[in-house]
Image (cartoon, rainbow over all chains, first blue to last red; front, side, top):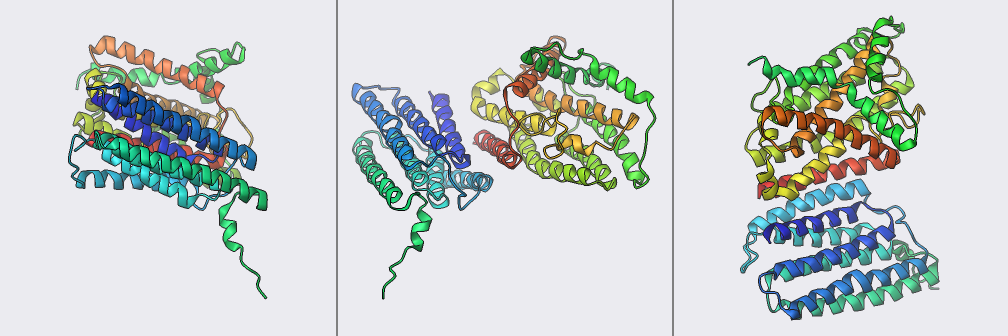
Length: 217
Length: 301
């Protein structure tokens, strides 16, 4: 099972890197959905020794939300906002990839320094989880459109999920469900916000909102 | 050093021009054409060698030395790489750095020869070639470093045959990443389609072709032969990583078949893909570098 989890973590890191390098929002959403499926598999493989019905259902549920509901909501928001491409991100794509490489190195360093208790000690889970969080943060700060930033939040949460699913065996369910629900609500709120931004301003580039100000007397 | 140890290098020197022929035949097959004969490259080389060279009065000795010295670098590079389990004619610890250096030297000579003509096109192609190779070189070296770490040897002729089924079982994901990175390096360095189109003669998009535009006769033959040797060298790295080791004779035959298969895959990629926009190429090459880094990190653990 060890090489299977390794392969899944490599897939996670690769999808993160692809997210950093793509300019099409539809591709971003598809990749985020793919990442949801990958994480569902991770949830299954981690508990492969003692597979319970509850565990399988939880993995299936989180996969359904991460790979089904949220991408569907985002795709719908994208269609309504009519934005298919990221116009000029703050940080270019090649530079994003290079920063991703640096982040990867930093995550591996953190992974080697951080002594985690429990079954995940010394495994590649820690670097992969930290890298996913870092890549999500990078997406949030470096992109202009609200939709790409929502995908960034998703990736960030996926990192937390990776950490949780491999480190905590039992308590993770509570933690996970809480985070996932928060996220679902956040995506709802942002979907509505994107829709409103779009209706008021005809675009969803959030950096232009900062130029708004009261023109008082 | 025995006579047999020269066999892979001699085979490479003889059979390298076959690979572009295989690529072109595959492309013709996909397009529904008959295509040029498999041995077309040999005929081209023979035709060019019998011609006289024409030199512009604005060029200096650099322009004349470029093709010859570049071919010499390519020949030494070919001697360094093993063919499957058969070691190359030259090998010592750390020869992977020499290989990268020789490939860089070959490129540098082509670049200064292109700049020496003083034409606008040559300079443009030279600038692009250098810009892209600055990104492929880290990908190549880091990928080889990952293989070196995995096999515990710094010599190409030891480390590539040492990659066996067991190491694939142990570090499969890492080696697959390195192989993917090496494939991108192979396509980019040989000016193949996602990066450069060897058939196009539209100045705005050319990279390699535009650099060698001013050469003619034997000089062009040297450049074409050097390019097919480079195709062989980088292809042998990839095939050496993927091919299982084993008996020298059988493994060598399998590796040669792998080289021909790789040329066929290149032709298939060229038929199925469009050339990337010039501005998107750095993203692809950076991606290859990232794959190499990831492979290295995975092996290091």
